[in-house]
Length: 236
Image (cartoon, rainbow, N blue to C red):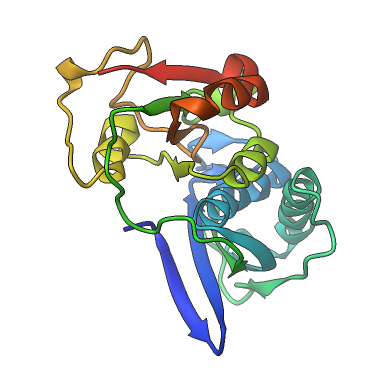
């Protein structure tokens, strides 16, 4: 199953997708020192990618800020950047800040509420003879996300690819590509040695800097055209 919660309300289905961030920000003890707009952007990315991959479009963003009141504006600016990349800038952003106590490290929780608009599969699908699989972007974590930003899969690609028929998307998280690949198909699991790829298949992808896509071979030209150099095919 995907990392989302489904809520059936009448004829509509809401998708709830969440992510969190800890030890990343501008506090003295943070492991990764970056401005809060970067924290907000990459935390939003993960939840938004889960939302689109589940066949939904974002309707609202809820932010839980444990970084202090001074961080709120930066976090919201980062979220707004992500919404602009997805061409949905008017979506409301709401939430709360912990202002009674000050944490020694930065911490953020974020939820995207989306409305399901397609029949994208929510559980594993079969691997067919003509199925192609690729990684879009590279797995990056920590300072790599900033230093190799040009290798991070753009949010616009998630939106564009999610609109293609017969494609399945799955964001890659902290457990790596191989783990997510083995959640993708109901009739096949893989050993690392069975996969041909120059990418580290077990490395964390941090804030989902890459994602998996499975599609029929007749969609190959379109997928490659959209993805350009972000496209990294996996063969078995």
